[in-house]
Length: 297
Ligand code: ZN
Image 1 (tube, rainbow, N blue to C red):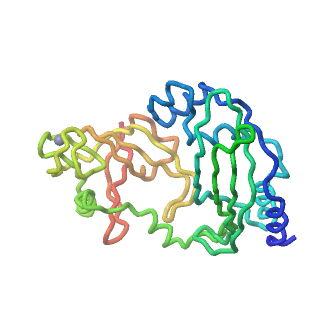
Image 2: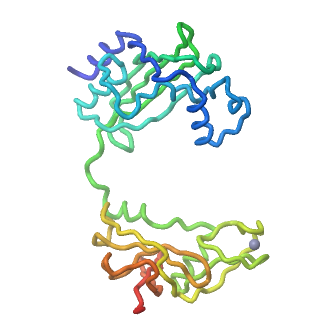
Image 3: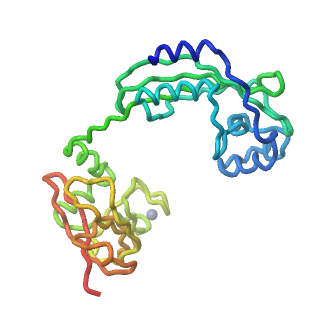
C-alpha cells in the first residue's frame, strides 16, 4: 500500500476510539507535576483544579502501552515505518484549553489524522509531516484540544564528511572566551578574574557570578592540576582520535576546573586525584586546545 493510500484510509476513519485515563484527576499526580515543573501557583497547589498544561499527562500510555491498531497516529506511524520512514521528531504542538478540570474527573482522549504532507527534504533526512488532532473529554464535554505535528523521516545513513563534523566540534569563540583561545595559541593557560572582587572562574562569562561586575581580566594558571573526574569516550568516532580516549575534568590549584583530553593515556591508567600537567595541542592557525598529560605521582 502506498503512503497516500494509507493516509486516505486512516483520515477517512475520523476520530479513533476513546482512550480513558488510567487514573482520575488526582492531587498526587498534580503535586508531582508542580514539583517537576517548579510551578508554585497557589491555584493549583491548593488542589481543586489541575494545571491545564497537564492535560496530556492524564492519558499518557505508560511504560507498557497496549497495541492500538485503531489509533490514527499509531496506524499512520506503522505505515510510514513500513515504508522506511522509521525515525520521529516532534515539530510543533498547539493546545487549547476549554475549561479547567477538577479532582475526580476522569478524562478520555480521541484522536484523528488531519494531514500528512510530504515527502519533504529536511536536514534530518527525507520525511513526512504528520498532523493529528486530539480532543480530551470529561464525559461528553470537550475540555482541551491539541494539534500535534511530527516529522517521520528516513534517517540519512551517510556519515557526515570528516571536515564537516570536525567543524561542528570546534569550540565557539565569543567575546567572553576570545582571551582564553588567544592564550592557548601562545601556550598560556589563562583564567578569567573579576576585577571588582578577584573571583576566578572558568569557563569565562560576561559577568562575575558573585558580585555581578562586568569588568573582567585574567591571570595565568600554573598549568598543573588533579583529575577531579573523567569519562572514557568510546563512541561516536571523533575526527583525529582513536577510540577509546579519556576526557578529564581537572581541578586547578587556582580553584577552577577545566575539561580536556588526557593525552596518551589508557583508561586504566587514570584515577580520580591523578596529578596532570597542561599541554597545548595545535589544531590549526585559529585553534589550539589545552589538553592534559599524567604526571608521575
Ligand atoms: Zn566579582
